[in-house]
Length: 422
Image (cartoon, rainbow, N blue to C red; front, side, top):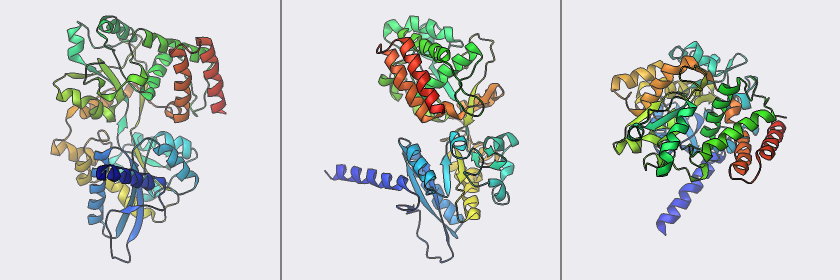
């Protein structure tokens, strides 16, 4: 009973912590200094991220005794919707971990977040290239700085492919060839969640048709013919047992041998792949799937997560010192490691290199990004829009599980996406 009460209490505390940045915050330490500046910070993640971030904030306050940092954090599930309410009510934290897509959603004109260019004497921007800075710039305002780059990677159990006499897939057709051999043993070629599935389907669609579903401003421009093609290909992937049904997919499926591969963000590679590696499996990063092996069709890259400062912050200089610490401080870099991906900041990356931390599957994924970045485009933020993806899943499920015809599902999907586009 005590354990249950403790769990309930912890969940309630987390709910309060992420619900608002003006109340219910916890300070990393209590200071008696009357001149201390109090700022707040929010982030999401798993328990290890919470632990090293809290340790980092304590370290920051040791190095900056004139600043107190209140904090608000939680898990990802539901975080974005709460964040939307905070932004709408100007109740968000001073320093925020944000998604790349939020720049377009909440600061299309560049005024939704503080302009970090104004803090160039506080934040060491020289640790970032001009291309890095461009990812967080809107209408000339530097709204955010990237922590690490991210892309959806395809990870395969190389031992399993070798057992079936197969090479690691390079083309879409290779997936079906592998499924023909593996399905008799009740093994799916790939397992993934809805977001990664849609990005995969969209890449196939763009390679096949040369068209896009969204224009450069994020407005939906797809047609009924377009969504029909996507739904039909999705059905082929499920019927031929290339992709495990979404409702039945688990992160542990790769480790358990139920799938021969998985698709996930590079920053999630440890979570998805490390258990299988620990079991002695040879997990390899596959090349991006193409129509043909020598095709150079582009895939998508984005900042994994970013740091931004509230446009309403009361002490920009103190917030800038915290952002600089989180991105560039060597001691904090050692605490964070590559949990969020290989750092973009040159100073943070150098600290990890010198300490021997640039190893393992997440570092390999980071190197994969570096090797392929010339053939990648910055992801259109609408491809990650939660409402868009919810609509796609609910309607595509009806077709995939034979509750609607292809024509019915395509018509409904086109109608709902057009309405969403306004």
